[in-house]
Image (tube, rainbow over all chains, first blue to last red; front, side, top):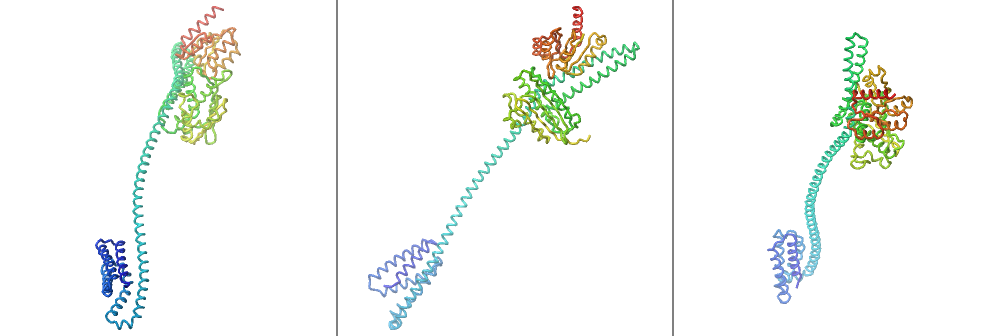
Length: 452
Length: 131
């Protein structure tokens, strides 16, 4: 009995393990398994038979074959340390057995040395094997690590792929939402334009009656003075033929005066029609030098007569206090006119509503005044109507806010006016009011120097 | 006869003076003018003339023609002045209200001066006969 069977068993197991771990190979695996069975059989044979000498030599041959195989085939290349570890022991054991069997006298002389060598070889083997084991474990660890990393990489790649899909989905969703929003904005813009248009048309409707009245009066004058002139010319002719030159000159003077009236009222009607056209036309957006007093006066009259035409019982005093030193300023007349019209209509509405409540002694009054300020023009519209409740005050310039009963106001009037004055013309619009007493809207428009 | 014309259009004064230049020249009719209801009342209080005919527009800023009519009928009873209202064409509501307030006669705009002259002449002659 010796150490060889264990070394052989250990070496084969190692080879097999190594093979399975690093480079699986069925054929080699089978061979090694067979070798293991062989070792087992030989081991029992060794124990239960007395042919120790024979089995010892079989063990030597077997171990040498294992070493040869491990050296010879590159699949076992990383088991060199194992071979190196067992080699000294194998050699010492071989030499020892050789001497014992064939040169017994020499063996007896040096058997102590051989025993020591054997012990040294065993120690060396253990040291080398431990080291080899350590190396294998480190290698295994590294393999394991590499494997884990590879798995992680695959996992991450899969996750990346999934993320890519999610991102693509999100992107397409966002794109779709963006398209929807853009579409909504386009629609909103169209609706807004339409609302502005209908608001304009609504105020135009209010104006129509006022305009008719305002045109009717100057036309009456034009007709009347023309008829008078026709008569006067007949008279002048008869005076001339009667030789009354002085009388004829006096009649001519009258004709001239009447003619001036005709021109005046003709122009008045003309201005009204032009104003109406300007109001109904889409704003050209062109700023032009405008007489603010004339613009305010025109729209004040239109607004007043418009309301009167709608409500015959409506009546209000209107006062104008225009600063005659006002220079023309650069504005879009139809836009500013619309803002004015809105303020006037609101003012008249406020006084007429108050009149409905307080019948006794209340005199509705709307005062429009203009004033030249340094670098700007101020327009004030003051009414002694119902005023604005405090809680509504910060909302009056918001779109769609209205205190009028439903169906009577779009709630766009003041917000549009505010937009025209502030955004359109870089001006300011403020309000001062006391509920139940008055409301005063103040517009300030920047006045540029117009060279003309 | 004194006629007070109440209208917020200032050129009405010139128009009446021209239209009735013969009557004015012959002192058949004397015209007075007021630009508002308030002014008309002030005039009436100051000059309580006999045989005053008032010709008033309805559509005026401030005191309307109807308010003026009502006040005249309340305040000036002796002698009651003749009040002729000028209404816009097709303005039935104001017409009815003016009747209920005691308007004596009506004219529609635009004023037919031939018709007005006829009416004034009958008034003048009517007065002449009664006095």
